Image (cartoon, rainbow, N blue to C red; front, side, top):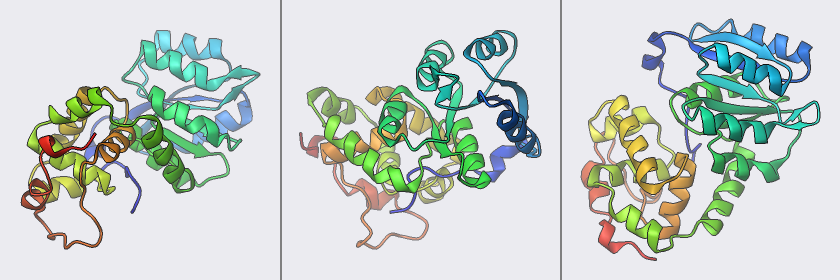
Length: 258
């Protein structure tokens, strides 16, 4: 299966640039990263911050859409800061940019609503992909940790009665979208298959997350798999443009297993 969530669609890049706050306690790295992001026409660096105090000072005086955040801020926990930011400003998309593996913390980050995780040793393209995905409420994880995190989510967040009931409240179109998400399809691909716009798909995804009471599509997919919601498997023929009828025939909410 391909990446669970992919980069935002090119057609969405025509709006005003997304404002990014770059947070890292190494000033040279923060400035270098800010300079690189400033080269992207759809991104605008709002500020850089090297301490927790500087982060809050920026957020109090400026509108920020995205935050790149290191895990270690001069001995302070960057992930704890991420949780505080999301509590106060839930619309902000946070991408962890770290020099340590700390894979054990990826699950914690995803569950609190962090939208991306990129290694400092990784490519710029990976970071740009994560930022653009975060700007659209999408979650982007590196391939090497995605399967492990998804497996842990499935094990820890099994479909208890509340989750199964939540899935049963999804509309048929939301179930169509969720099944497509289970196969790692992008918003453009889902829209083309279901004959709706990518923005409509985005609205459906937001509704799915709200009804399932989760912060990310990754968690929604884990819950759906544990509940027994059928997806579009690789060994079945997938129509090239229209899977709406196909996915509608894969089971209704009443057929979910608990």
